[in-house]
Length: 518
Image (cartoon, helix red, strand yellow):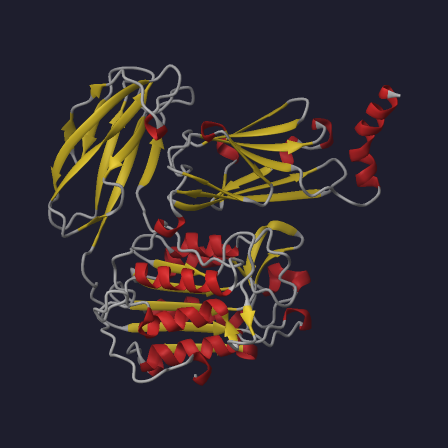
């Protein structure tokens, strides 16, 4: 009897596939250094970004899957180059070595991990995970770690910077840098801001993130650095005798509002989609209200605010507004981009994500929608301005938005839109859908965004709303209104101390200026 049951258990995966129903929960994310296991399509928080390895498990017989058709992504970037695939009795293991190549370390704030696998029957399986580093509310931190290996078998030093813990301000003059370097060999050199720094070996064990791995030595450093005028970052670099180097880069942001010469905005809202199943209720109203606020309250010239709603927000119209209208901007200009509508995955390829214009066809996303790689081109190549603020209220719950389990549209937008000193705020987190409210007659995110920009987010009543103030106000308002079902997210690049609209001092509101009156 046991033999028969075991045989049936072996055949169940095959029978499931032949029967036409594919099991969904077959992936698991393992973070060995934090002793964490994360179920498919869930999120987890780790206290620090000094994680060197992620492990993706695929449950099922290794003979069922084509190893060459397993694709992984970390924060939107293909992770195949850092992936090693093995198997055991339980299934397939995809080991991601985050130190193998620069650009794959976890960032402070939210990180996305995706995996797509195809079995021998041609069926695709997709899973995604969110890994938060530190407190979600402090996701504007932008201290970055970059690893350069002398060879594949040469481990790079690991730097744990305990101070400063956040980006610096150009008002700072003398800053103390302290922390630890971990490595398996001696002969390390440390450089902080272009100056050689001493390392002192510490043999006493410790707790938390400063605990060395087995076989590693721990070195402590502490040095005061005088910040020179005009510099934009301080680099802490540890180099070993084998040529492997780790850099921790601490950015320096302006302490006051940046000068903005001209102001431009593209505002898009789509409710009346051509495809009936996509239709929303309030996205176009949200866009109209946001445009009115820019002109009436934020000093944007009417001619510099391009509004595209419903049938005007075609794929061609949106591309023209982003890649032609905004191409005229210069480095010192202020640019605002607002999108309210649908964001979706391509049902034919879960790794391709799109923002949906009015004329989008769900069965032809590649030919009718705006792909995420075009958005990356916009922020990396077309826009010259460094003063760019992006708001995205996508992944709305009406229409065919799905269950939200694979909602990474906002993650991809934020990754592209938040480079450098640019700011971005998106409506919802992974696994969530952006809510529309009949009571508010608006999208919940945009409702609190407008309230915040009208002055309610000005916590210190100085007449200027910083990105940090706005993020906190919108996040708390949306989270509370939706009973925790929707959480706006700001990713790296958001400078908490920078005015959201530079050089714009708000005048006090008279009376109650409600959203419904717009």
